[in-house]
Length: 598
Ligand code: GCU
Image (cartoon, rainbow, N blue to C red; front, side, top):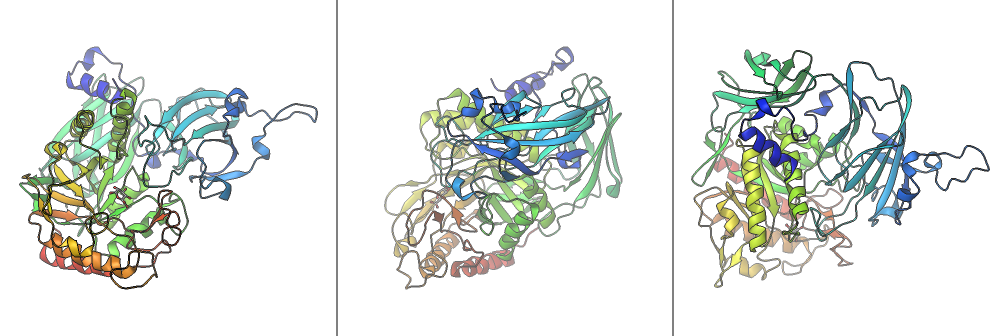
C-alpha cells in the first residue's frame, strides 16, 4: 500500500492519539516562501549511457590529487547545464538522449544548531538518485512533482557538494509509459533549494472555502518536529479574519470557521489575500484566493453562478526557447497568449506543470485543469504503476491545493476502457476525491462511434468523475471537413460536460485551399465547421481546443510539415497566430457575451 493511502486510512480511523508515527510526509508546502539557499544555476554534468557512474561511484566526486592519480571522471573539469532545465534543449548532442546523466555542484553552508535542513527539488524527469557529500540521501521516481530529503546533521560547516543521477529512460511500468505524444525532456527541470526550518515547523497547510459554501473556511495545518502539538493561528488581516486551532500529538490541526466579507476570487476579479499561518515556533505566509467550484446538473458553478469554460490545452514547453520553461516569465507569456484568445481556462496537459504556473494563473484570473500523466495504455496490472500514479496525484494535489485557479484534477487522458484500467482509474478517482473534496475530478475520455455519425460518451469512468470530458477529432483523424457537421453527440450524464480536445494541424505560413491538409486554410475551415457543430451540442460547460501552441514530439515525422513538431497549435512554434486563432477568439468573445464570467 502506498504512503498516501496509509496516511489517509490512519487519519480516517482517527487512531492518531495512539499512533503518533505517520506515513512519510509529502514535501514542505510553499517552499518559495521559506528561508532557502537557491541551488539553481550551472551544474557540472557527465552523460552516462552505460551507467558506468554507479560502479565507479561518481557520487564520491573524487578529483585527481596528483598527476599520477587514476581517476576516470572529473565533474569540476566537465561542462555545465543550467538548472532548472532539461538537457535535450541545452546541448544539441542530447536532443534525443534518453538515459542517465550525472549532475554535480558545490555549495557553501554554515548550519545552525536548533535548525533543520531539507534539500528540495521542484521536479526531476524521471528517476533521481541524490547524494550529499558522498553519501546517498535517497531516490525518487516521477518526472513532474516535488520531493525532498532531510539533511539535518549531514551538512558540512563550509564546503559541501551534491551529486544527482537522473535517468529519463522510458519504461513500461512508469507513468507515463513508453509511448506518448510529447518530448521526453530529461533533467533537473524544477528549482533546487536547501531549506532551513525551525525544529518544529509548519510542514503543510490547506486554507480554502468549504465545498460549495462561501461563508465557511475549512482546512488543516500540519506541524512536523519534536513538539508537534500546540496552538496554531490562521489570519487573513485584510479581511479581519483570525482562526485558532489546536494541533494534536500527530501534528494535525483542523479547523472549520464561519467567515464574512471575503471578496471571492474569479477570472473577472482574481482577488488574492495575504494569509498568515503561525505556530509556536514558525510562521509562513501565502497569497490565497477564495472561491467555490460545484455542479448543479449540467451546469458548472463558480461561486454558485454558472460559468462556461473558454479553454485551451497547453504543454509545459516554451517554443521560443526550446525546452521546459525556465522561469515565470515563460509561463506568463504563454498564459498571456491564451488570454489574448479570450480564454478563462487552461488545460495543463498531460502532466503537472511547474509550481509557479498555478500561482501566475491565480494572479491572472485563469482557471486551471491539472493532470497526472496516466496517458493512453499504461501498465494497468502493475502495483508499482498504481503506486506511482497515486503518489504523483497525491503530490500534485498536495502542492497546488491552495491555488484558487485550480478547479479540476484530471486522473488521465484517453485511457482504454478495459477491466484492469477501470479498476485502476476507480482507485485514482477515489483518491482524488478523498484528498480534495473541494474540487472537481475529471479525465479526458475516449468517445464511442456508434455509427450513423452518432458519437456516444459512454466510458464507465464517466460515472466516477464530476466533469465528463472527452476528446474528438472528427474532420482530422476521422473523415474530412465536410463530415464534421454530420456528427451528433450523446452525453448521457446529468453532470457538466467539456470537450477536452479537438484540433487539426497546420504549418504556420503554409497557405493553400481549404481542402489541402497542413494549410492554415484547412485548419481554419476545420475550426469553422467544428465550432458550428459544437454550438449544436446542448449543455456543454466548456471547450478546450488542442492546442495553444505547436510543441515538439518525436512521433510527428512528416518532413515537410511536422519535422518533429505537433502542428495543431493555434500559435506557430515561432509565436505567430495562425488563421484559426482568430476564429477561436471570435467564438470565445461571443461565448463571453452570452455567458459572462461570474
Ligand atoms: C490526443 C492526445 C494528445 C495528442 C493529440 C494529437 O488526443 O490526447 O496528447 O497530442 O491527440 O494527436 O495531436
